[in-house]
Image (cartoon, rainbow, N blue to C red; front, side):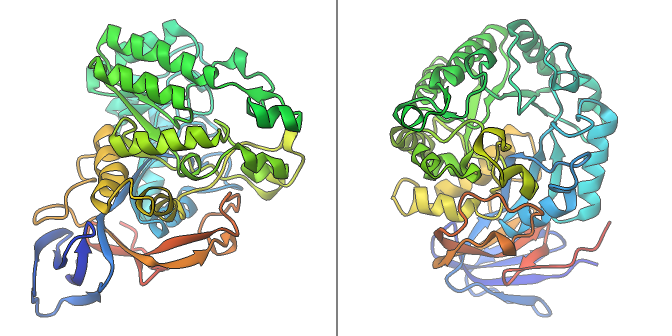
Length: 434
């Protein structure tokens, strides 16, 4: 049974206060002084109403690494972060390289009910980079896969990458590339530069990312296909993407919250919480990434939420796992890096964290404007409080947040998935399984 909610005095996209009437899973009306007898009132004075956030890059770890995260725990974390849809990456065990595995992940998402889970299919079998996976079967499956990625590994063979780009054209798919030339990064531990030299760690050069992006935008142009670049991290990558877009290449790109806020000086602590792929780069790279997100060269923010069990991080840097969790802190980090600095307003945040990622992932029911007739996927956000990040209170099963102990602005107060609150008053709501 569907409830009717009247959200009172929300600042839609940070603008003037308005009421939002939610009925039968959709937005029925937006306006001033609305009245709806029998509706449950949600007081939203001072809160910003955003379309439900969409993450193009989430690691939910199920099947195979349920010690780090499950579809249920990961989507609970997503709901707490204001997300109504996440794309689940394929590097699970078994790998999501067949119709059977992507359908399993999709069904687990539906059963959990906290947000839409859109599986990402592997580009190659076993993400081994040798043979194409069952791209067509995954696209035709119940999961309707449209994004394909070997994330965690680069599709480094140019012939395989070309074939994948050609293949996905048949169903308007996109290949999301983890841009990392493997030969240039063997044994690399952090960004190659002044800091790696000072710390005596093997460096990960910017050119390892940029060389693959340069190759792949040329391939995408050659075959007339869609390319998406995962977790862009260098100023040089920004320039290549900007050039490719100016040439009309169908390329889109994402940046993570941690690459917008943190830089390679964090490695001075030797704390593996800051070890990530691609690595944290220089302060100049961070500035370039922020401006590229602001001007639209980088299309969207994607968390690359990468949960790990405690023992994988609480060890020596050289053997520690790479990755950070980010679903529950994404919006506060974007507020800190982009809104407080004047680079984006809340309309821009809605574009980079909802509209564009939904469009890239071809999610028709997500990333829609907050207007009558749209599905009621809504995030209510309070930008005013400043809170110290404490991963102990997270819904994620993992605690590897690089923002632990950092004071960040803002807090998600409510998340509505098709008119049903998954989070209300900052607390997770019980879900009714379909």
